[in-house]
Length: 600
Image 1 (cartoon, rainbow, N blue to C red):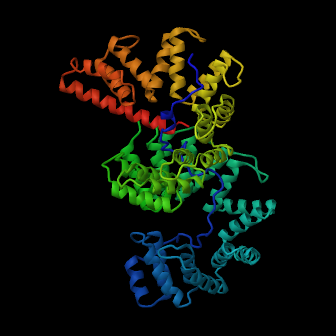
Image 2: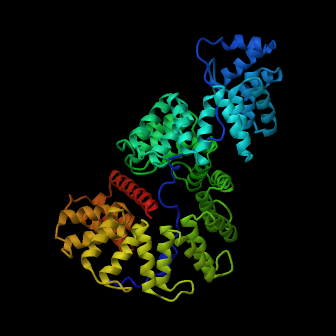
Image 3: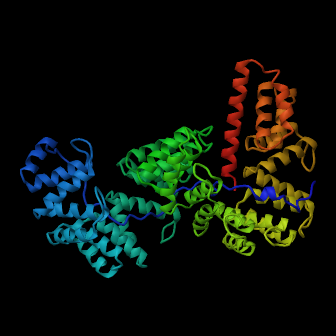
């Protein structure tokens, strides 16, 4: 067993590209600060041309109805700017419902720019005319301004006037201010009457538990399904996430993908982002980068900032389609300026490495620093590393350690793992200290880092850093790391299982570990497995598969694989064999890259 008390500077220089696990929108309570005051009209509506004729003739009711027609796409395509314009014309004539609808659109920025002054004027006038939903939305405006007392009075008036959205929002306000039983009663009343935002909020409470509710994921899924079937996109998206994660329902990635697509068609931009994450994972089979890129594009074009970042990254690096560095930088910059920390990290990498733009290490460090302020793990590692080395900034090892420790102490596993490496190597002005390294590896392992689990296990096995030698515990820790997908642990267990070191000798189990390690990009596993395919040891001999494994091992830094690959090329001289070998190598490389990006 080799010592793990040292680490090469090369290991410290690995770029971190991802922030850890998938950046799902958080499951649970969601806020919608503005309530929709209009309901989809029922019954027979006049045809759009008839409404258009009457509206253009100046009939206020027809103008209002035509606005509804455009808003809901009843007599033709939906067109929110047109809806807003016709509501405005009805409002100019004092039409009460038109005033309420126009005020809502001004307040929410629907169909045009937000106009809070104009919204307040229209909503007050509509409320004075008896439009309870307008009073509720005026209360929303007051809440946005921090005027809770007057907002409460208005919401109470709107509830008395029959506004369902007000019942929900007053319930939210009650819960936020500590009047939980009263608030829960109002919210549940709104849920019982089919209010979509109340249903979404209440399902979040059921998922999280608390506020007098016992967690009930199955009921939450049932409520979300009802709202989704009614066409409410955010509920469809959340139901998709439950199927994606197996919460309240049996995990079903295909059902999740279908629901994400439906939510996207219902206008929920985040669903395209979540669909992209799913398609780019391995939960539906091999990652589908082309389809993920299309999903991210739809999310980006609909204005979802993290979707802009993902789409920009794929354009910049040519993932899932042709590279478009200029377009990628535009989307990444827009997302980074919108506050997306992952986009800030990727934009920093682009400037630091000169990807699609002139190399500018100082500008890269500036973007990393903005992501560090949001505790982005990969950005923190990169910023601290190059601050210690003096690239893009004057060298400041002391601050680098402070930055890294500050994030590590907040339980971010990547930062804790990196700090362990720094203490182990004596990097950034630190003295080599295996005891301190072990402390941070253990903390990172307990926070979920599979790489730290592997390091911690190695210390326990070797009895280093003050750890008591415990081979049995080390094997258990290696198994935990392997189950979490750590390629080094998988390869080590493969070796131990082949040789019977600390575990029963079992070639079949060993081969399974070896194949899993290879799929996750372990170069040694790829090299050994290539040899097995060449000689037919434990697997059917296949020179094409042998070539593919050796080619990827070489690509990942194992130079010893190069001569083997070149020797084998004489045996697979047929064009079709060479084409298959290249395809297999590309698939292996893509799978390894996806696996390593997911590993913390």
